Image (cartoon, rainbow, N blue to C red; front, side, top):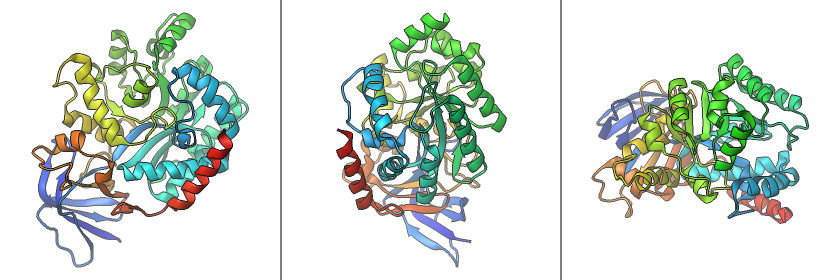
Length: 431
């Protein structure tokens, strides 16, 4: 069984006690962490990795993505969400989203995600079976679901066909140690009540998460309220959709009743601050959500609306925006922001028993961050340094399930040049 010992490490565990080991070791056997302690662990049969000058911490968990949208990065910028989506993105996807293009765009997304410290992502898109297969090859942890929607998409022509694709994906990957299937209902404005209930039924049948966009814009709130007589989250609650296994992306425009409903039902939020800012959708009051007891995680959204997949940058925005909203420098402190980007994400996806923190018995999903870099020193407080000072280039190496997926900035299982050339070819056909 492979045995790796990372030593000379400043270990940020993100466990329940937020324990930090200033100079310690992590022993990994197979996929799992076997031991974490101060000092150097000795073993006669191990690969030793010297982490001197490094912070070792859980990898980032991106809880809301559309990874193949790298093919539409910058395609239709500076537009309101519904204009951007209906007049530009949906038509472009109809032309460009093919199985071959999805594979290329996914590999490009993985390069960016791995280089910025993401070890797990939660995706909603089309041809998710291809995204899952590409993730398996690369070794990155993936939570994937075919996006159910009430009109034809690039991967299915009828809703029944979409539901069949959804269940086929679940059955193909259910129980896999790296790929975790989910159910995705696009939103309450693109899915009928019947579609939403069917999605919930499938999620309950397989005991897996349900991923959905909720209350992203004021227009959505106004439209749903006019159609149903209730605001988006209240409407979803009324049909039994809010629950402990639901990841509600964005959730920008929640009223006080909806905040209470999220907390009561244990619905999680996937907060996407940069995308919401860029589309002028608004700023979610995550400080209030957290204080109400809601589990808030962080997502980047797709690169067509962000335009990056950089979780470090996203985490910094998630920490800074609440301070500006409330004129309170103590709102969403660095420790909280780092929890949102790691263990809270694992909780949202129902996989906190295997990832999101560095603890004995959990999977070895971790990153090494160069803490002795010029933009990082001096490190008085590790959480502050990571959230407010680090950048993606500080991420030097990454491991998922005990296997390296990046060593010293070299992404190991993707041909970067081939992928970038293929993406350039796709871009030439987009205009």
